[in-house]
Image 1 (cartoon, rainbow, N blue to C red):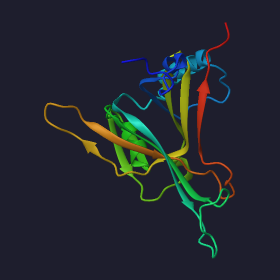
Image 2: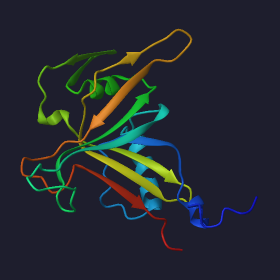
Image 3: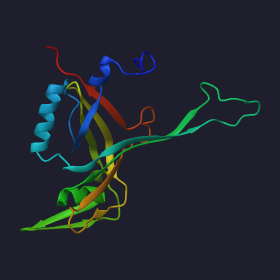
Length: 205
């Protein structure tokens, strides 16, 4: 059997572009002023130390962007035409399973959770109304690429809108399901969906 030839996408660059491992999830992460992968790694380390990390995960996670598109039904239209498809809505979200059951994680995943601390006791309650303060500035997933670069996926104005689920079993660890959805910041913000994917290259040597 011969070499694959031109019938494969495998190239020397392929092994530089692989995304490796499960990455890390951060909340309210400031990254706008960061310029390269080395600086980002320092910023991530600082954020983790300051408590911005959501915690360890199991099974990695997924990033989704779903779009609802529409092609108007018009008399005389026989085909789908370039320029004739419209995006009615977009939903960007990130889901994962957390293995750290903490008061802060439960508060965040409830969406409207409020924690009250009295001595060594922390009580969490859930409000029935969502306020502006319940939205996180962002949820960021930072992942490694095989050549040392870092890719960042940013869910803006994030809120966990999935049902809260704490799963517990005998001879196993409890897990928390999370699904953070992005939200527009204002009613006139239509040009871009509220998420971004940012690639940070290594600094020039």
